[in-house]
Amino acid sequence: MKSIACISSSVRAACHHTSSACFPLNRALTMCTPVGRCSKEDLSTRTVVAQQPCVTAAVPVRTFHGTRVNTAVVHQVSAAHFPKPGPLLPRKKDDELTLCQFSRPVPMDKTSSPVPHMSPYSPFIKPKGSEAAPVNANVLRLRNEYLDCVGFAVEEDTLSPGEAARVYSLLALCYDAASQQQALMLSTLNRRTQRLVHRLKASQVSNILQALSKLPQREAISLVLRLSNRASRVFKAFSDDEVIKVLSALAIMGQHDEEMLAAMEKHLPGRLGKCDPELISTVMEYCLQMRCRSEPIFEAVAENFVCNAERHSTLQIAKQIVAMGRLNYLPQCSSHMFKKLESILSTRFSHFQPRSLIEVLHACIHLERFPLNYMSRVFSPHFLQRLQAQGEPLDKNALGQLTQLHLSTSLECTHYWGPRLPYFFHVKKFYTVDQAFETPMESLLYKRVKGPLTQLLGGNVYSTKVSTHCGYTIDVEICLDENGYILPLSEWDHTYRRMALFLDGENRFCNNTHHLLGKEATKRRHVRRMGYEVVQIPYFEFEKLRSQEEQVQYLHNKIFPTIFKFNHTCSTRDSSETLIG
Image 1 (tube, rainbow, N blue to C red):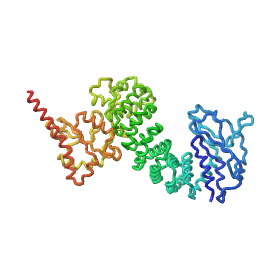
Image 2: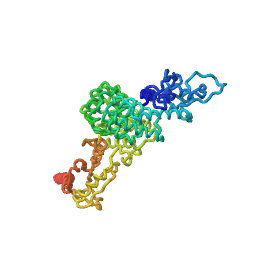
Image 3: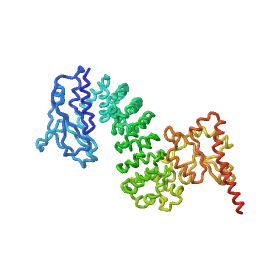
Image 4: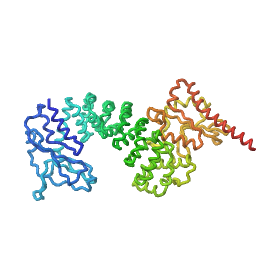
């Protein structure tokens, strides 16, 4: 069996992320001889390290010295004459470099000016907007042979946990989706790594998860679940950067479990005061994407915001406030938190990107905190021009957020007399593909409610998916006359009062809780202010009912007290008018 130490050192060099990406191509052929063992004959050689796109022309190409190789292989590779390479391809700017490719140099003309000595394998850097530099066939062959050796070790199941982590990093750098060989190697590596998960260290878990987020994951679901479980067990040992890697990878793969949340709730609150602010914003982004409304985490973030918000960037501040608003969480220190936010907005208003600023203000209205001091600035022609001058046309989400801010001022803040949003910025409907403002009614829940509701009302005297003049969608609408009686569809022209039934499925609530999402809470408030009698039928209450008789009685207890309340209000108004007369 070949020595794994050779593969380990080669993969380590190939997957080195901190300052360079290295492919030691000469050394790739030396990992095993035809009989499967490393040769004892050594020869010193060099491997060029291609810097990441952030390097500049002034930085010299670094080399690794003293690398051991197989003598016979070196003679084969060095049989052809390698002249000195030409200069790097021209480029525009250092921040426009987008690709590093490896290639053997093209023979130079003897009349060419001399250039500094470099290794036979020189990087060709592709500037943005230029044609890709051709990759030499010999280099591709050497790279494939290198991957063959790594694949042989994976197939033989001789990798240690650390070597497995480095192989994942290597595949994340050079994975070719069209290569069946690499796909087979990745599938085998996934199966082998599942048996090593319990031995992985914290840094190895974060590296593998980060690599898997860049690789095909269809066949790695079981591995991701085990890695997530392992991450929850070693969470305390993660550094700030490793926590960011783990949560970012899990968010990309859509993975969430209760053990990870429990580990975060146990270990994160105590380290937020000393950690990198980017970690806090990453945690809040993960909670938002997974709809995790965690009281310990959110309370700790709010307290840290009150104490340390000045050292956070405007984008980090926006991520924290947006997560709390959209998950409908009002912390206990909310008064201090919003005072701090108001102070930051007053001093750093111009530092916020227009889109980020709108998202912050929009999140505030979910928590019934109305930023009236800044509405006049947001609705001003100058700010709207800034918003449009960012190079992209206003998308429906930005217009929807502006429209909801406008509705909050007109429906909930009647004492506001400042500027209003121009009508041509209003959206006609809040429904969007990404469900940013309202979640559509679940068809399965409606089918379960439809029969008992029809039996209770004595027929199909209601309408579904009704659009209001403000753009919201009502799940089920029932119309009443001035005496409080339910009107059939044919007599809806005589409607005096409307009732809105919201069939709230699981997607309208935070994960594993009975708290509505911020967008749904705001929708209920606005619909109620528009004159509707609002009745909520949550899934977790209706699913407990087994027989249709219980379901009918449940709907009766929900709907008719609202009608009786309306009748009582009407009769009181009539009697007061009689006394006045």
